[in-house]
Image (cartoon, rainbow, N blue to C red; front, side, top):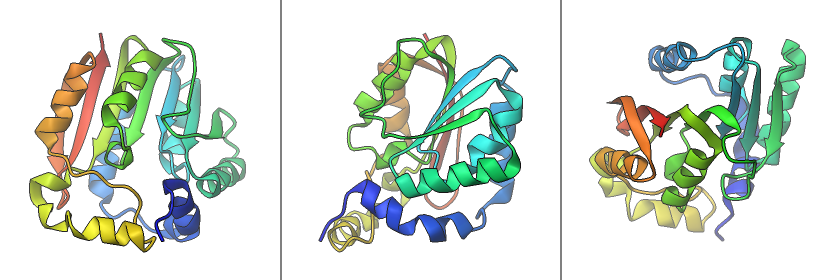
Length: 207
């Protein structure tokens, strides 16, 4: 039987938290690109924070990070990690993009890393992110673009979802995602793709 995204990620959270980073070089490149734009006074929001690893890496470079995820189990692990590390400027909150709310222009930077391909309504998610950012604020994302290279998985994923072995996953091309980002008012500043899944890393600014 199909499960919700929250149920899926709750179930896999313990194992996910123990997995090593698959591509440490690319991960370090993404961290460096984001941190080059960070300032000590910044308010940052991360959607899809998972177990909080990236938020905790960025914490020393900004004033505060609100780190959100649909999975209560993931959030619990993130809070535990923050406590162990003595990091106090990251607030973990269980929430998806759809239900998250804050005043317009609340954040200097929004992160959505390995998330947009897991969101059923990507356009609505992007519009919300744009609204939450201050003018000139940064949107940093990394999005798996399965339609570019792994389109043969299209009939497989729904079956995996039905038996509870996969969350919702969309099949998009990198150019399609870039177009959607531009359509809601973002200006792309930097973007590149990597890996077998043709993941699109993007830095954009809000108009």
